[in-house]
Length: 309
Figure 1: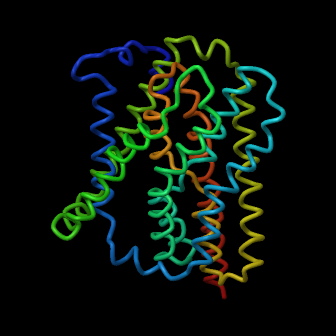
Figure 2: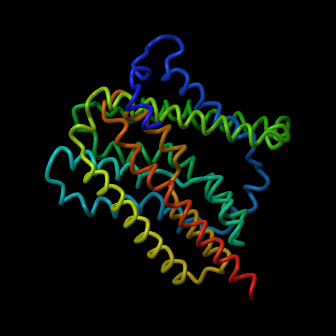
């Protein structure tokens, strides 16, 4: 999609009824409506009681991650580095993934009901917490950051469709599970369209003429370090709290992940009017690919170790 946006960026500028902005806006609502259909309230509520696990996971996702990035802010020395820092901070402020967190916890033989609850709770909290964090560092910029209008947009785009899906879960939940693979394909298509649309606008604005290969490498190294430090701290917290092995797996996998779906949606809502929208997706895409590879490797090792016991 990035290569396509670089080669043929003009589609991103089309402003008709079938513009990519309109298509992705509608698609986003359907993504979260289908997510609500597939989310079983009974299964989710099974993991509610383990409050220490939930607290450790959510604080890591929404407090530890952002604070680690904020600690590097004094080293910012130019407008370009400020933009790169903001893009990494956006990644840090995002909620956890849902489906891949649950799948990886299941593979590693962790606490699956708690993973479902934490991942779902993270997505809901992110609607409020992510724009709050970004508003703290973007309110004084050239583009006005209206926290309340953004909150309304995110509510309409994400939370309302999820609620509608949950309400129709009994009636249409079976249909959603039956066609899960097709709905996943739909989700991925919309996300890819958002990525193309974001990068096409950035290429047309000339953003990547001022951001070089070394800057992109810096982003890659930074997100890997961020993952490593967070995973290490969360591992120590889990040991300190004396979590059971299955709870520790859930905390590590849910607390260290970031959602590409929420990242794509929130980038569109928060930075839709900015020419630099594409750069905000770079850390999210790098982190998403890295977390899948690293966590899947760890999950298989933990499953094998538990199987040998």
